Amino acid sequence: MSTVILATRSEGKVRELAPLFADAGYDVLTLDAARIPPSPNEDAIEAFETFEENALAKARHFFARSRGIPVIADDSGLVVEALGGKPGVHSKRWSGRADLEGHALDTANNAYLVEALRGRENRAAHYVCVAAFCDGTREFTARGETRGRILEAPRGSGGFGYDPYFWSEDLQGTFADISRDAKAAVSHRGRAVRALLDRLRRGR
Image (cartoon, rainbow, N blue to C red; front, side, top):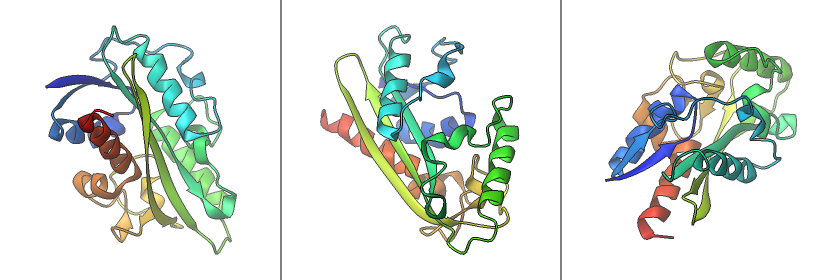
């Protein structure tokens, strides 16, 4: 079994993606397990205007600290049609609350989203994820998307980020109101990672 580092500080992402790697025959290390502590400049890594550039920048950054272990990173976000594509690559801290993390940050971002869409009829949205691989020799990315709409009120107690407000066209439910396996089957992140793992399996 090959070992890769999943370069994220998000426990939600680890819970969602680790089973996909295990099913593909990879032993996954979190950043903590790989003994890569947080650094002050981590939030500045994703400073680009595309998901692809941000994902690659993140993969390169953590590979440089990985002692030679291959790294898979991602950049993902919510794209809302009526908001001109926002929050997009700025989804993580769209509310501007640099002082918050985890559930508190999710709550602030969702409140900002609800207010931005107040009174709007068009609530179409899609999630985007780009997963990037880096092993010091090879670099490549894979993209996944999933379509839906933004609800006026949250549904479900699972998921993370904007999931309680994102109604999935594929599942006819929010990403916070379904099982982890059901979400991974159709989510932007699941689709991107499966495509990336398929490229690894084929050796290109």
